[in-house]
Length: 138
Image (cartoon, rainbow, N blue to C red; front, side, top):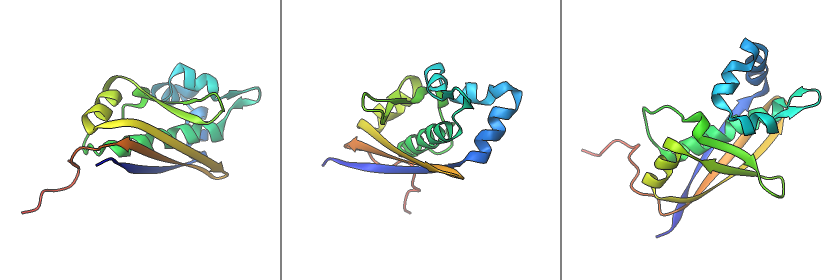
């Protein structure tokens, strides 16, 4: 039976401002690919709302995998722009492996932002395998 899962996350703009202001954005370089960082640059500096939306989308996608105790593969989940300007998900490395292991065929995201935060929802289509994130019943 085909069905899906939903993940959601919220990122405050203030957290992104802190990350862009310290260590010359080194934390963001560990979280956003070069292509994502390029998409998040504006003539006036970093696109705080855009960065917050990308980070929220990455977290929302990771929540779909339901893999407790594992770290988020930040650079393996990219939130890019499709031809129409909407966000698209590109997976690589461990993130792509997690998606395959979960039985996902496609992941969509939607992002909204309004000061003071961004929110993202991720949806996976396919036939998700058994949920390994829940405790087994006795």
